[in-house]
Image 1 (cartoon, helix red, strand yellow):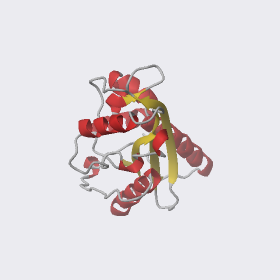
Image 2 (cartoon, rainbow, N blue to C red):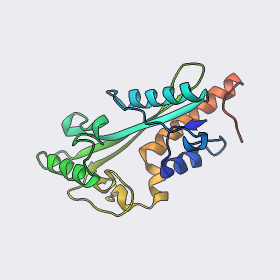
Image 3 (cartoon, rainbow, N blue to C red):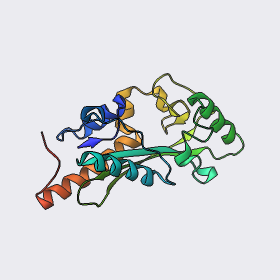
Length: 200
């Protein structure tokens, strides 16, 4: 099945979890597409991407959408995590803006939410969800990762950017969503006895 990404880090993480499935990237199927993420939820954006890739390839497809949600601000920035300062803002600018906003309140609790959506000819999306709890650090820390990783602090006191790639893959919201989705797909395909997905 096709995972709607060309991000090597995402692809590696997903292939490790779906080790008994054949997972293809967009480049593997010579597909160049940039789906506009204009929905008002992670589920909406992931579903839109999965459906669009399926409509072009006629192959079982899945896609993800994720973001940072702050408890004190009703889940902001949520689906706008990568765009709340505009398309041209850098990760550093976004992270500093989030820290500044959190400095206004005492509650720094936050979650990383990821939704992973599978779609095929049956027309019913199957959803995997992952939620990672933590809080916003008082300043960026760590050299690894990307996006908001330097400011998302885990209960063990480390930010995501202070973890190795292997450590992050074991606890990330995306890996949790992938595990959830794989369990649902395994159960579905075992019960139905029919699958569009080619196992290795």
